Length: 62
Image (tube, rainbow, N blue to C red):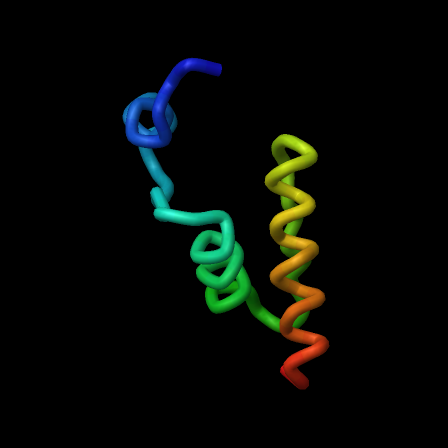
C-alpha cells in the first residue's frame, strides 16, 4: 500500500507509469485491439474515475 508506482514497477519489471488514471486509461485503450477487453482494477476511486472519463467521452460525442 505504501509503495510508489515507480517502486512497484521495479518489482514487476515490465509496465508503464502514468501521471493520472485518465492517462493510463487512454494508453490502455490506444494499445488495445478491437477484440481486446480492458479491465480496470484497483480502488473504488480508481474505477470510478475511469467511469467518469468514459461517461465524459459519451457526453462529448466520442
